[in-house]
Image 1 (cartoon, one colour):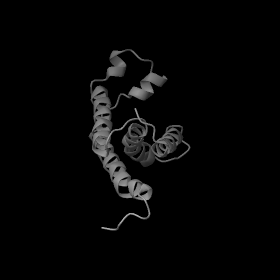
Image 2: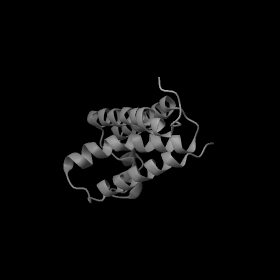
Image 3: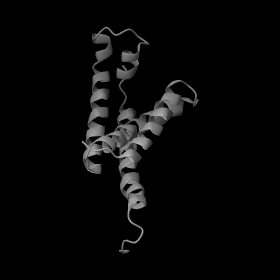
Image 4: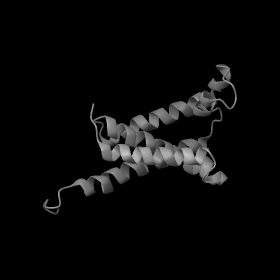
Length: 133
């Protein structure tokens, strides 16, 4: 187990944005249906990078696997099969509407998270006196 606070700060910020989107504080159907989905995998990615020693590629694959599994369970209408009450927290978290677009948005968000991590965050943490390539 590792503890990397910078990644957890990003994960917490993404979580706050996700809650704001879910509660309607950031309006718009596109925001709720697409941007919110695109932020789910980065949230998982940065959380995984913050609490484990996962490499960027492992965090990306695990994050996408979680997202794709959740979407597959939505395809199977697991929330209805479990007779979860519509509108309840478990029902909302699990979801019940499959969408191919969600899978695309998960992928876009995951790739962007890994790219930002490798190209931006890791560069910011690099020693300033390191030799330039």
